[in-house]
Amino acid sequence: MNNLDATDWKLLEILQENGKLTTKEIAQKVNLSPTPVYERIKRLEKNEIIKKYVAIIEAEKVGRTLTVFCNITLKEHTKKIGNKFVKDIISLKEVTECYNISGDYDFLLKIIVKDMKHYQTFVINDLGAIQNIGSAHSTFVIGTIKHSYAIPLQ
Image: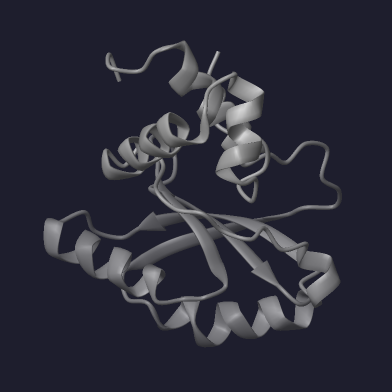
């Protein structure tokens, strides 16, 4: 991170805003020619500062209308059991994010499903099939106030 100069930071901001811009368009925004911009972006990718490029889908427009945050507590806390839980959670496509957290719970899951019926089926058939879950506490999103994928850089 010490190797990043002001231009690198600007490139990251631009790419977080619109990853589909061409190198030429980005170069105009940072007042450089396309070749050094291209080389800088490749370096950021190689150093895994830029992990990947994705299309961000509007969940509701593809029929995924319910977002749930689910707090999980494990019954036991061993390395083997924790690793098994993580492996099982990663395999569930409805779980879009999973965090190992401190406090009253062990994990926080973000789950996106079609509707409440889909969530009920998911909890019974998928989440319920994972061994060693002591408790699961669900919080249902009724409205989104702010949702950003951008990492604050300044």
